Every structure is written in structure tokens, then in C-alpha cells.
Length: 245
Image 1 (cartoon, one colour):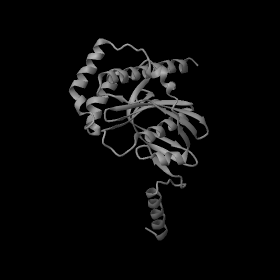
Image 2 (tube, helix red, strand yellow):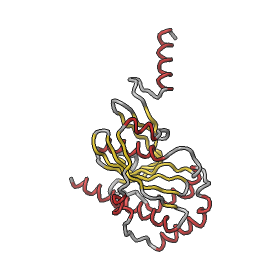
Image 3 (cartoon, one colour):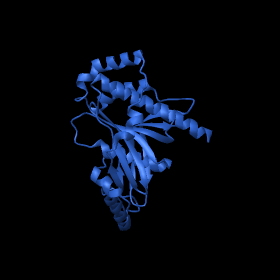
Image 4 (cartoon, helix red, strand yellow):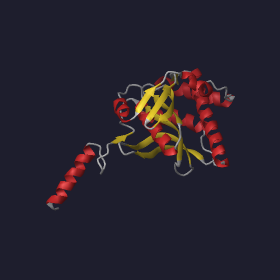
């Protein structure tokens, strides 16, 4: 290796350590971005006008008796352990069965759920990239257009904050889809929070976070289930409109 090649290799390693690409643009991973970093990159503020959730979280979707029995069985088996479960155990034993029960896949409308989907959003100032925990998206074999995200299947005693991580994913999806709003949820142990992000202008956003849903309580767990079914129905209606255009 020549001296010039060694210098170029060293410069590349330094850029990677600093999270920069070849052009010197900083890169931020969804799984590591912090609230302070996000607020330095975009104009984003939290709104406390939670009436925006009225239609979504106050839905009157009926849960069948069989689905209620499923939730009760799931909770009786794992409810006492939700706060202590490690990430993969929580995901495999509790979260995925709920997601599978809602069943986001539609062959007719080409919608499906994807785990660890890779998303890349680039601007001239920063890059967001990484793998998402769970995405509901257009596409059956691979994700083509994301509509909803669930972030952070982690136990309760963690130091990382899932909120900015989810927001970075929602921002990326809004910009890639050319949308003005996007929905998602994040989970820490037993607690679920639902989130809406709205685009107000170039690199300017506001977001809303729901009250806590404690999935270790059957009433809240049924609410979580209804909220996910609402998302599924809404995405299907959206795809119907898009297909008709």
C-alpha cells in the first residue's frame, strides 16, 4: 500500500468514527440518535393538544370474544414478566403474537409487516439510516412504502430513549413518501405509547404522544389491540384510495 493509499484509508476510518460519509455529511443511526441530536438537525416540537388522538384512540372497534380470550391467555402467561423480559424474549413471547393476531398482511392490497427493514433518508445536511423494529408497509416480499412503525422492543430498565429513534424513522418515512403525517408507537417493557408526527414545513415538524398504555392490564391491552386494528383498517382504506387514483 502506497503512502497516499494509507492516508486515504486513515481519512476514511476517521470519517467512519465521526459518523461521516464520503462527502463529510454526518450519519445518524435510528437506534442511537438522541433527543438533543434530533433537535439540532430539524425544527421539531412536542404538542400537548392530544385531541388529535380522538378518532384513533377512542375508536369503537369491537374485539371478538375469541380475541379477548387470546389476550387474556397471553396476559395470564406473561403479564408478570413484561418489565423484566430482555428485548428478544419480550418480542417473541408477547409482542409478535399480538401483531400476528391483528394480522397486517393483505394479499389483495399488497400490505404486510416487516421486521428489521432498512431505511435510508439523505439530505445535504444529515443522513438517517438503520433497521426498524417493525414496519407496516406496502409490499409483500419487501417493504416498498412504510405506513406505520413500532419501535423499541425493550425491557423497562434501559437507558436509551425510544422516542427520538421513532421520530427519526417517522421523519424519514414522511419525506420518502412525500406525506404530511405519519403514525407509530414505541414500547418500553409493558408500556406502549402511540405517536403522530406532522410536517409543518421544510425540516419543521410537530409530534404528539399518547398517554401510557400498560399492557400488563387487560383493559389497556384491549385498547392497544383496538388501536392496532384501527391502523390496519386505515392503511387498507388508504391503499384503496391510492389504487383508485
